Length: 119
Figure (spheres, one colour):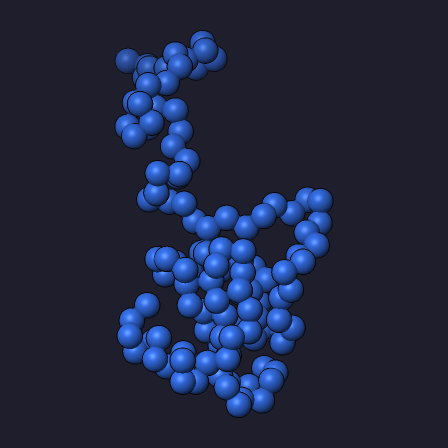
């Protein structure tokens, strides 16, 4: 975060909550609550990366809802916990045979037949 963002947050921001990743969410002090109310923003913990914002906080940031998300999420059985985009990190998925995953993969199983043109 830059010094200017930090200073603006100290002077004009009211802390609303924090998510499970440590990101902190603010709204403008003194602004009326609701969709017509002032600005809303996030101060990221670590590198600023938009995919770190969970869906419930994304709804609040973009004024889809006025309800501030609670710590108790009550996820449905079919919902998975939010994960940030891991592309470009060491935790990114690399399929077998990828250069950064050892560059080795299993031999073909014989269900593939190469095409050859009729001469």
